[in-house]
Every structure is written in structure tokens, then in C-alpha cells.
Image (cartoon, rainbow, N blue to C red):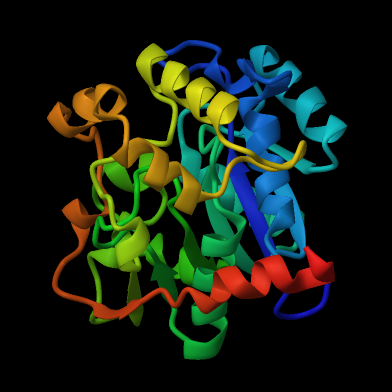
Length: 275
């Protein structure tokens, strides 16, 4: 693999606590995992897509679904998510990693593209749009190198480091150069939920797909999603009242360098191949 190749690594397993089996639950005939794979593949800055799942037999269907949609697969520890990323990075020779979760059913290819480009331009160790919560919850993007992830293992001292992969990086700005990308105003809705953790989330996601125009192999655009949710307080009331289980801002040690995601990355995405 050539130096500098960017790999989207999607963590996926069947053992979700709040909505068991959600990974392969369907919207319009495709699983949540499939929509996430397709959206990640559509990001112009991502060269390959890997699904990091577990060695458990119950995740055999995750492997089959991943391969069906053209993703590579790595199988690792069932409980230690970070070890899965490290294992995938070593076994598949990954250089630059884009971390994605499999329940990101309206994951945005153009937001991903923009955040990856900021990482490549800035030369920072870690760039994400979740260090400050300004985007809708569910289009989170984190970019870091294998070298940075390995180095962060020397600094971990909390269980959260193994579950959420990158907290040790954000807690140590004296070691790692970190950049926080914030949302442009048009999609700055930090309390909106477009991930799927509960049945209510799934019901809203199905409504978004049913009501919004989108390509057969792509989720609705996040701009359209936000505009629609703005018009439907009946769908967002539970989101605004809820407390997020985990936020990347929780373990950010201090204010990071910040920039606003330019909307030009959306223009670039739709301009490719005359799309």
C-alpha cells in the first residue's frame, strides 16, 4: 500500500445493548451497515473501506454483509474496540485512518471529504468534527495515522480509551497536534440525532429516507436532513430532551485549534463526474 492512502474503518458488531442487532436492520432494503459502507465509499478522499468487527460467531453475518458491499474485513477483540483498530491497521497496512461507526445511516460523504482534506492540508496528528459538538450526532469523522494511534497507547489510563479509541489523543494536546472542525451554520444542529441507537432513532431514520430524495445507493444529504428536521419538531422533541451517552468533547483537555468546515467541500463532492 502506498504511503498516505486513506482508509475508512467502520466499527461494527451485532451486540448493541440498546437496540440488539441494529447493524443489519434495514431501511429501504439495505442494512444500516450497508448504507454506512456506501456513504464512506462515496467520499472522494477515501481510498478503501474496511469493516472492523469481532471474532465472535454472531458477527459472521456482519462479515458477509461487508463483503457483499465491497468492504474489506478485519476481525478482532469483541470488547476492546481500539485493539480492533490497531489490529486492522497492522494486518491490512493502513496508514491514514478515518474512524466511522456502523450506525451512521446518513453519514455524509461530503462532510467526510472536507474533514479528511483538512487533515491532509494541515499535517495535524488528529482532525475531527467531534471535539466540539456542532454537527448533528451521527456524521462524526475522526482522522489520524496508525503512528498516532500507536503512540496514544502509551498514554492511555482509562477504560474509555479502549471503548472509544481516540480519547487519549484528545486528552494530550501537549503530545498531539489536534484540529477541531466545526459545522457551517446551515447544518449546525448539535442536538439533532441522525445515528441509530434506539428504536426511536430508527423510526426517524426511516422517515428521513421515505420523505427525502436521494440516490439508490446514497443516504439523503445532511443539508436536506437538517432542513426537514427543522420543519418537524414532532421528530426532534426527544432528541432535544436527551443526553448523549458519550461526547468527544468530554475528554478534550483544552480548547483546540478550530476551523469551520467550508461548504466548498460539498460543491466538490457534487461536481465529481458531473454528479
